[in-house]
Image 1: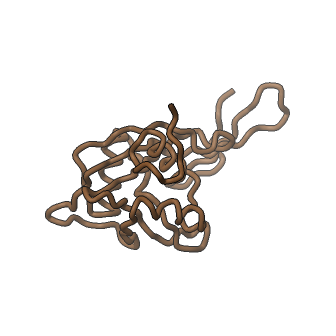
Image 2: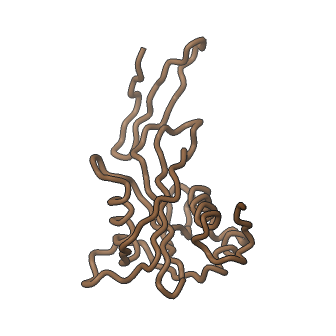
Image 3: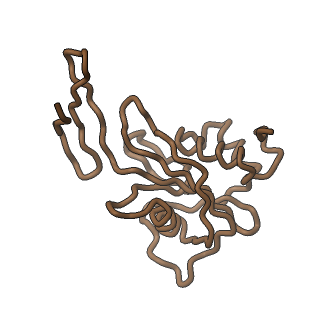
Length: 178
C-alpha cells in the first residue's frame, strides 16, 4: 500500500499512510524541508526577526527561516532567507545540524545554519514585507528565551546547537560539552 493525499494546499499535503498491524491509517503532514539561520554581525550582535504569525495570532521573535524551494540546496535557501528577511548576507554558512522538526507528524527536515560576519546587502535588496529586523546582543538572547519572547521550539534548538558548537560567546548559561 502507498500513501494517499487526502488534502493539499501550496504549503503542505496531508497523507493517509497505512500502518502494518493497524486498522486505522496514520496521517502525516508532508511539507518541504526548511532552513533556519543564526546569523551574527561582525560586532557580534545576532540578527533576529519579528513578524506576525497567524497560527498563534501574535508577533513572534525568531531567527531568519523558511522553506527550501523544489530543487534548491539547503545552503542556497539559507542564504536567500537571510537576505530576504534581514537584508544581510554572509560569506560562510556552517551547517550546525539537520533535525526532525516533529517526527510524530512531519517527515521533513530542518537544516540549521550559522552565519558569522553578516554584512548588509549592497545594494539593499527586496526585503520580505511584514518582517522586521531586530538586532540582539548575544547576552540578551537567553533573557528573551527565559521571558518567553523567543519561544519557537525549532529556533531554540538552533541556538542550542550553535552554543554547543561554540558559535555563541561563553557565559550564556549553556555549558559546552567536553
